[in-house]
Each structure stands twice: as C-alpha cells, then as structure tokens.
Length: 376
Image (cartoon, rainbow, N blue to C red; front, side, top):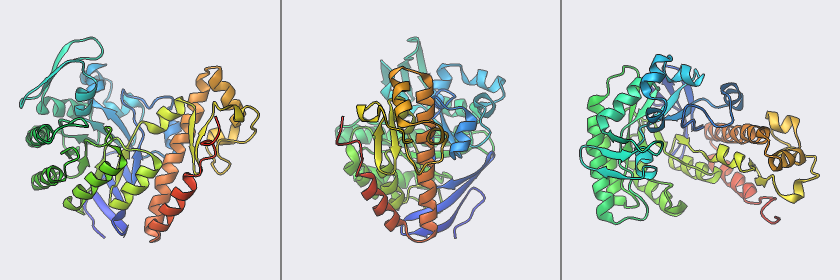
C-alpha cells in the first residue's frame, strides 16, 4: 500500500494498520510496543532478554540522561546504542513530560522551562533548541519535539496556552534539528479539548514532520477521555506517517488504540507491574504474592514459552517475591515483556488477515475474566 523510505503500510483493517518503520538501526514492524529504558536500561532486563522477548525498539529519556550521566558522556562512550548495549532502534523522549511532572520548582516561559533537578536541586534551563541538541548528541533513531504537557484536570485556557507554546516549540525544534538520518516527531497537545487537539494536529501536519505523537494523555483523565482525544486527533494526521501514542498503556488500551489507527506505544506498565509481583496473561493479571499461589505448580501462563514460564512455577515465584530475591523481578519482567510483544505481534497478524475486530473482541472478553480478581 503506502510506501516511503521511512514508513510503509502493508495491510489495513478499518483504521488499524500493519506497517513498518525503517531506521538506521533496522526495521520495526508496527503496531509496536517499546519497553522503557528511561535511564539507559530497561529495569531488570538485559538487552539479550529484551531481544528474546521480541522487543524491536526501546525508549530512553533525554531528561534523565542529560541529568545523569550527561549526553556528552554517552557520546564519548560511543553513543546511546553502545551505551545501552542495544543495537536495534531507539526512540528518545525529549523530557517535556518529566520537566512538568518531576521537577520540584519550575518556571515556564515562551523561551523554555527553568527547573530544579530532582537529583541534586541544580537549576537547569531547557529550551526546544537545547532539548533537540541533547537528543542529537545521544544519537537515537527517533527523537521527540520538546513540548509542554498540561496536567489533568486543567482549565481550557491553561491547556490552550500549553498547546500553542508546544506548537511554537515544535517549529524551533525542527529548525534546530541537525543530525542526518534521525527522525524528529512532532507531538499533538490540547488536553481533553477536541478543538485544541484538532488545531494542534493541523499545525503539526503543516510543518511536515516524518511522524506524529499524541501526548498529554494517560495523565489521569481516564480511558473514555483518552479515546475521545484520539478520535479527535487521529483523523487529522496523515495516513502515510507513523502515529505514536505516548505512555500507554494496558493491554486493552493497546487493542482499542490500534483499532483507531495508532502504530506505536511505550509504557512502564509491563516492567513496573512485574516488580510489583503482577504478571499479565491472556486471562488477565496474576498476582503472584497471593496466598492461593503458595503451592501452585503451574507456570505463570501455560501457553507462554518465555524463560519464566519454562523454568519456574507460580509457587516458586511467590516465594522469591516474599524473600525479596531479585530473580523474581527479572523472571516476571521477562514474562510481561514477552506478553506485550506477543500481543502486538498477534495484532499485526490479525490486521493482515482482515480479522482485527474479531481478535480484539475475543481477547478482551477472555482477558477480563481474570482468575485472580476474585481472591486475595
């Protein structure tokens, strides 16, 4: 179907797309879910385990890597791919969300954001130009424009100011971007206000970015308002460019958003839940600390072939979590990452076969019958 050197669509089923990206570090099949390696590593997972789990692309964060160890250190150590020991594609977030969620004190003007580091309290000024320079230096395959993420809830006037500032910053990022072969994505903002989302999307499309992200969701607004924001935004974005939904989400979120035309996702949910002794399966979550698993000889998921499911029982994992053994987080992270990668792979196959709606409905019906929801 649609083809370009960077992005192509192999099949579509309604708005859902089976597509691909081509980056300097290889191809990514879409829809894709990116494990989050905020500070230069995906928690509890080595690169070979990520690859075995099926991950094609991972995410790093410019805010955190700028604060520690510094982008110049990463560059001297061979760039972000060598630094992370990951030789497949990487996307970096500009740090806009972190500035507005982690920084203790901040002052935002049209020039940029001045804030105190959450690590040592140092005062830092981050502008669109500086955020772009940091990401150029890190050397990821895809980088993000610096934006202002409005909180939820907020008044329309606040969301409008943040959106307009983000659009001005996107143009400045585009002008500052200087690394050949590195794709810069614009980010749609506008809070939960449809008209602001539409205006933001239209302005970014006029700037002609190689891809577009939807930001400012999954910040407390709930699924209904998030889907409403997507329904307003996605039809305004070009069909021949990739669409990335930032910071989302649950397995059901992924299925609903893929049906609406989203191609790329990232979220800490698989690994964060794993460290909290919660495993994802096709029949919902398994809470491994539950007493009911003390003598359970079954794997997390009998249908899964990951290392955890091949080698340890639920009972053994429960013991490891209660004993605070690192192996518990490692094994459950392997499983959850494998689960998410299998899910998007199944979505790609269902789209190619023209049965995405059927697959989605069957998955959600089975997933919502979680075996652990009824017992402590």
